[in-house]
Image: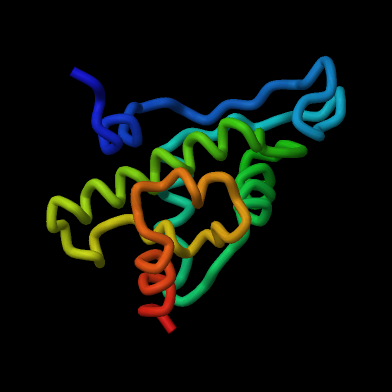
Length: 133
């Protein structure tokens, strides 16, 4: 049986860094790159104050700084961010109170490929963001 999004989010992976020996996803060779985790991204989003919004780039920069890395992998961050979003949507569909799910709408998804992949209507996403104003 396939894992649920919540199981994927709570997988227990830990963030780690690696030194790049060749350029990767716009990150130069020699840089230290953070490979985060679904749980760390979930925690980052949960600590964002109500009514605030950050870009995926701002989130990656903040996570890199926390780990004293030069950059955060945009590829794995995108995958992990989608896991966090889908886990929250899954919990919402199971009638978990909104106050208890990860407020993924605080990360600005406009113009990202993640936005079109999520199992939530774009208008509903806008309503969630508007509910915090």
